[in-house]
Length: 361
Image (cartoon, rainbow, N blue to C red; front, side, top):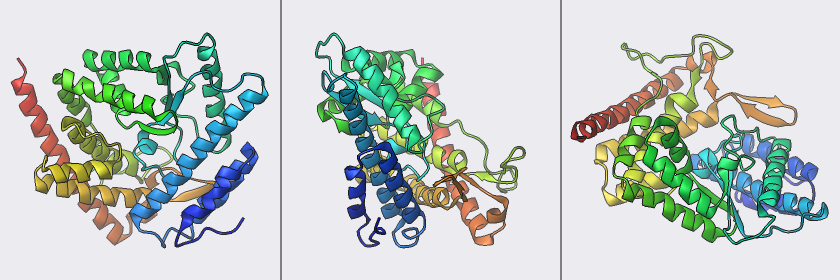
């Protein structure tokens, strides 16, 4: 395979569309992943790099669904009996996935009556998960996958579930609703995803208390700076002495911006686009939004810079900065500054939550 064009990497993704088997698709992913990690690492801007990485994942997802349906036809199941939409959540939903992200996806199935549609999409969901795992995408530990009934439902069942999550206001259903808020359409019938989104945001218009429930979930995250302003590292385990970039910096910012976006009815899944919309609407005080934007770009860079190891033919990362990296003065200075911004955003939301709690009858 020819190396990726530095000036326009997307042309090489044609190899994904041409893949006729799981083996060929994995080979394409291996080559492009290596080129993105090595050749393009210093040749693209940070945002361009993430765009290229997520274009890779999107195309592989679409091709995987296509290959699985092809396999269903060959095995006598036929084509999908009714329209469907394959959707993604998590970092893929936000188009912020790294090269080594795991699976986070679901399915919306049309309400058009068909006797065998449940069995068909149950089998298809299992095949998609297994194929993606074969391609190097680890199964989601939280089981947010289209093989799971909760994340593979008809449109009407999804609407009932969204309604239930939004009215219980307990930790687990609100957490599920937060996961769902990053939904993004990948392939199938886009109108199903559009109607799903309309139903999702209707819950926030209908249940005013829902935003406060999301805020309560948002302000909880692990301490990253001690009282002396020093970075809190892992004390035990294989990452002892390292720093958890995902849960120490990235996720707190994603959660904060997501809450602000949902609060103001912004129907975007990308954190960057959410921040851009919040800024254009002047929905958030400029100092707070500026802190979010600066910290988030730093968080993306830190996620990309975590040490990479080869596992077979694919590359993986733990998501931790190691002790050696934390001894680099500039990196440690940048991390402390970023964590200070995260703390500033976090405190602002804590104040907002205290105010909201006082308003409650």
